[in-house]
Image (cartoon, rainbow, N blue to C red; front, side, top):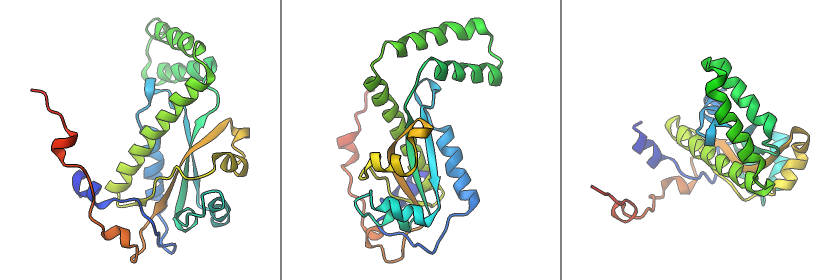
Length: 210
C-alpha cells in the first residue's frame, strides 16, 4: 500500500480477532520500529514491554477500564519511560555514539557536558514531562508502521498506570508505564472498520508560505 492509502486503512481498532496472532517477523518489525523512533537528543528514555501472555493480558484488562482490546489483541505493547535520566544515562548514550561512530572525545565531550549540566538543572517533573513527549513520538512511529504492515492497533491512554506498574513490576525496572497499544488483526464484524474517516479539510489544517 502507498503511505496515504495505509493511513486511510488504519483506525483505532475496537474489536480484534482473538484467533489471529502476529507472526514473530511482524512483532520484530514493531520492536525495531520502536527502537528506531526519533527521540530528543537521541537519548531514548523509553522501553517497551511486549506481552503475549493471555492470562496477563486478561489481568491488565481490569486496569484498562475493561476495554476488551487489551486481552483480545494478539500482543499488548506497553510504552514506558525511564524513571531516571541522570548523568550516567547520558554518558552511556555518548559512549554508544563513540563506539558506533568512532567520534573523537574532543568532539563529543562539549555536547555531553552541556547535556549533563542541562538535565541536572531540570526538576524531576520537567524531565518526566519531556520523557512522556518522547513516548508519544514512539507511539506515532508504531502506528504508522502498523498501518504500513497492515497490523491493526488501538492507541490507549485509558488505563491505570500505577496498577500496570505494579502488575509488571516496573518499579524494579526503574520504569513507569505511559501508553498502551494493543496490536493484532481486526475482527470481521468490527463496524468501526467500515466508518469513513472524519478529518478537517486540508485547507483548514495546512498553512502554506511561499
